[in-house]
Image 1: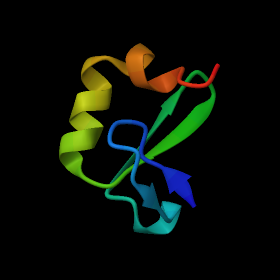
Image 2: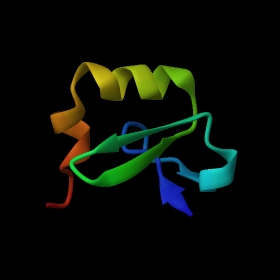
Image 3: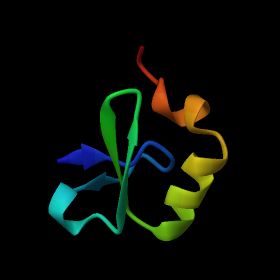
Image 4: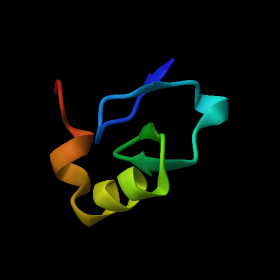
Length: 50
């Protein structure tokens, strides 16, 4: 399972609506809205827990 970095939803990577590479990590998204939110500010969401 993967966690959508925007909303925190647990999703299977194969069921993700979209995915995005950021700093060597692939993030998976439950919706296009979450994907677009991530793209607007990837550093906000892409570095949680680091």
